[in-house]
Image (cartoon, rainbow, N blue to C red):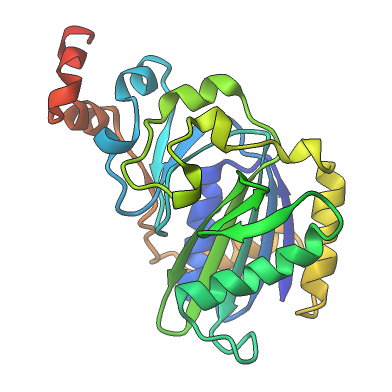
Length: 257
């Protein structure tokens, strides 16, 4: 498995690279990125802005909104988010069935090693939690021969960024209708960035033979595949305004812009 360590790579760029590697590479990858360059909202492939976001605030503050190529929910990421991604061939893990729940369980077992002796770590309804508070959100995509599992870890977060989300209509049962700040927690209260990254690499080494690689390895792979067109993209201001105008509950937006 190739191991790539990045720092501050914009999340849109990272997602483009991950999608390219999933669809065009035949190698296994572990990618760790310490933070994106600016606050950004990232939605799953089927996410609907009017249902998930407070669009008036998003537009007013000019917060970028990205629709990624994987499923999962919506997250606000920033320089304090740590991203960890596994991109694997279907036969990379012996005995692992290439379906969402087996892959989720496999990653849960890996992160059990990472957080051993630290906090009350659990995998709960596809989230990583300490006790009953979430600090890691997951998303996946599975193709004919490969799969990707990527996680956004809240090492820290800005409280003001939580104001861009609505309470989701579909939420984990364990959330119990709690607001965002009562539902999530900061990973930095349990461990440092460097310790988390070191533990993640060591835990991955128990499953794979890791080969350190430079960021250029990804860039070279992507440049070879010039015909590849990523589906992950930035939503335009027009698309966000249209979504707001189409929502009866957001009719006031037309009076604000």
